[in-house]
Image 1 (cartoon, rainbow, N blue to C red):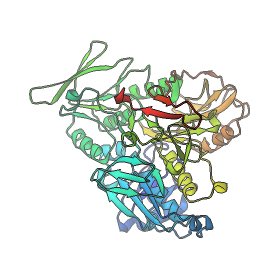
Image 2: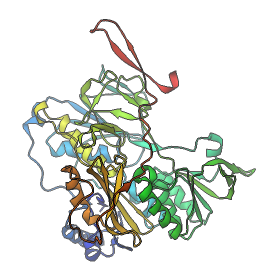
Image 3: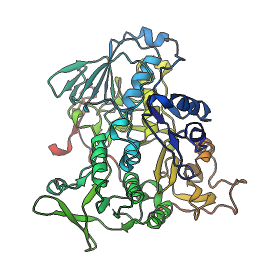
Image 4: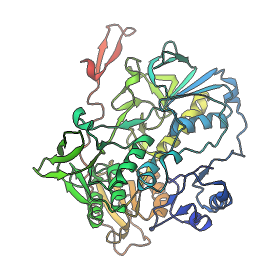
Amino acid sequence: MRVVVDLTKCQGYGQCVFAAPDVFRMPHHEALMYELDPDESKRDQVLRAAAACPVRALLLDEAITERQEKTSAAGDTGIGRIVIVGASLAGLRAAATLRREGYAGALTLIGDEPGEPYDRPPLSKQVLSGQIAAADTMLPRRDELDAEWIRGVAAVGLDLAARQVRLADGRAVGYDRLLIATGVRARPWPDPQEAALDGVSVLRSRQDAAELRRRLASGPRVLVIGGGFTGSEIASVCRELDLPVTVAERGPAPLVGALGGVVGRIAADMQRENGVDLRCGVTVTALEGDRDGRLRRARLSDGSVLDVDLAVAALGAVRNVEWLDGSGLAAGAWGVGCDAGCRAFDVNGIVCDDVFVAGDVARFPHPVYGYQFLTLEHWGNAVSQAHVAAHNMISPSGRLRPHLSLPVFWSAQFGVNIKSVGVPTFADEVAIVQGSVEERRFVAVYGHRGRITAAVTFDEAMWLDFYRDLIERAAPFPPDFAMVGRSAPPRAVPAEIPARIPAIHDATVVVTGHNPDERRATLIPAGAR
């Protein structure tokens, strides 16, 4: 059986550890680790753990017994075929939702990777540390999808007028409704020759994780380039394995881009306390190899030189949108534009009723954050957006749902469970309202113009639902009422959020035509200027 814990729901109660100690473990306060593919002898333990979880966060490879009745909306739309491009988390969840809500028509899932869909969060945690094999990260199949799978073949084009997806093998797949869920890939090291050195890696796919695990087992000197969540988690695993690791971060502290300078400095202290050689305010200017093409050293912008055997570029992600060039959709480096109902819009800003977007590749407006367009590379966002998109694909206009879920993400590093609700970067102030920074157990609340906009917890996940409610009610910031674990009134300080770079800075649009019925916009790809 396959097991996945929805860590956007998990609050660290640890009941699963008591019920199934052979499958789940919590080596620190809240950082839950678990076996993704336990053998059948542990089935009873796992079922007890799922029943004991107070927030129902365990997802098992079991058939769903409670199915919604087929709605008239799903049965009467006349939709002949739904095609989902992107057969990972968002695509799989959307397909399952379609079937649960009564869609009985033809369903095709297209994925460029050859194997079954797998869960990515364990790659930078359990797989790198050797707790599980990369092959054991498959996502649970919670429904009988009755779908056509096209695996190992990439989509290379989209014809909106003909309603066809063009594939790399020359085929064209027609659709009545299309879901784009192609996600992101790791941003490579920018110098191709240096990136080709033996010992220069990225971490995104299951193959990446397996290769990195193999290299870590040889005891290398490691350089992590980038101090975001992925880079910090890799550094954490290195220290867990007692490997020397240097983190080179161009910003003033790790996690600054996501959590701001105040919490970033706490993360920096945590890394150094655990033996990481953290270098902030520097960049890697060159990676050098020997005559055999093996990585040997790295040069930094401060003039220092590091002897290294393995360098992991943790430089963020690139959205998989190139296949949409020339399609007429508003798609580019910023993602695929869509409305709050996950309907894609074209380069003229007009919503497409038959094309939807979900997951890491979607760029959508969020009413809670001033209708700002967001792209979120979060597990929970992919799941909730997939549900909304699938529902809206088979529903009449009067029954469409908006995607209003607040973003939730988590990271386990250096024995600490870091979780967040809301958008911390949409803030100008932050206050530590509960717990102790020194003990690495606290709640930081973010505010914008006097309203709570986000909360970040270090080993205090049980408070997230409370703060989620405050964010949704636009409660005043800082919170001014008696709190558990607070010894003094909170003091708000600048959150030190880096200046936002507009995501559409590289969008070039040409408007043609003079008469109102002739005016059209054309999106010019970045490489075609």
